[in-house]
Length: 326
Figure (spheres, helix red, strand yellow):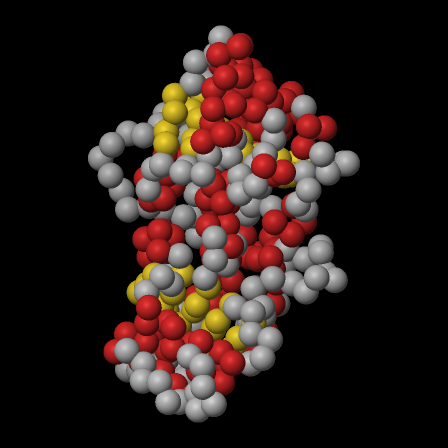
């Protein structure tokens, strides 16, 4: 049972390094932990640009970037794991915590031993993904299940989604999108996960015909996908606005203002779903049973032959329209 003393609230630190999608898929488990110990002071150590969203949405009380050198204490080498002195920040976040949850692979137990040597009162170190022989358990559900030894209740994936607050960004005074804006993100972490650019252009054309304004989103690694999609749009004579390299908080605010979102298996798709945008994500070689975005209005389309080209534009557009009507 969680400690509930008002004078000395439980201090919990959660460590989840990873890419954007990996970080966002940990938030339902974080929400479950928050529900289990509502009076606790929860510190999150994770990808830096996600931290303002976790703080504004009430999922954490304090947050620190995983990129800080202070966390190297978890991997210090040597036979005496207590020989390396932690920095003041590492001492406060790790050594003085009542509970430290670390979602990192730790096959030799080094991280667990280091936390014990630092003096953490209780530590739980678990793999951030299901084992290779379990390809059907969603990553968010897996992370929540790793918390069972603490006494947290077992929840279904739907219950975790309902428990997770809608992500909100620190507000700005700038209107970024409108209720008739349709966001399209043709990029992904690898070329094999990118739906053909022509299909994105076809959906943009259908959206234009229905009175929506297409908005292309692109990050620093999306040059090829953006160029191919813009070329396909020109061939169709379809105009689209482009937003490039926006900070994550601004991107979250923009997505929250859009009528809908269409993208690949990517971190941006997870962000769109968690801010509450009607979200359609197309999957080919990866399995949505394990990686689907989570949110109140999400549809994952998977090619039956794992080839993204097998999903046509009309199927994606109809799925998105159905979500936008709900």
